[in-house]
Image (cartoon, rainbow, N blue to C red; front, side, top):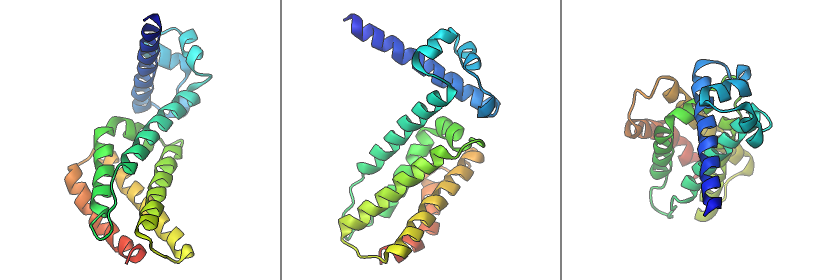
Length: 192
């Protein structure tokens, strides 16, 4: 029973530090944020921070990896059926994920000091594209395929960043429809 209590406290403490990090990233460049800034904002002792992380980059990395894992799991759960429209559910789920996690995605994707998180999500999207191709048994010129996957994933990421930067002036459904207008021709080249 006591072990569950300790786990809850650790979860709560880490959550407080994550919230503090996001608050600070809204206010200042990530490179200027210190462990002291985080613990002051979270009303924690600095020793508590160092009990869990060696530095602020570790906290950011843990946050990025957790969100990237959730993003990957969400994409893995989308069923791809040959002969049916599969693109819309994929793009729709990506837009839903971004909308549901907009504060976190805004902090991580619009971080001017690093595009690591954007690269992680882009790689996850490219892997999903490869899975779709394999599931449908399609043969595509491997050189062209790399370019198309890169174009779709990076273009989608650019649209997401702009959407977040403008504080989501379109609903997730409007964004999904708009993204499909732009992306569908590329899907048609990849999967004729």
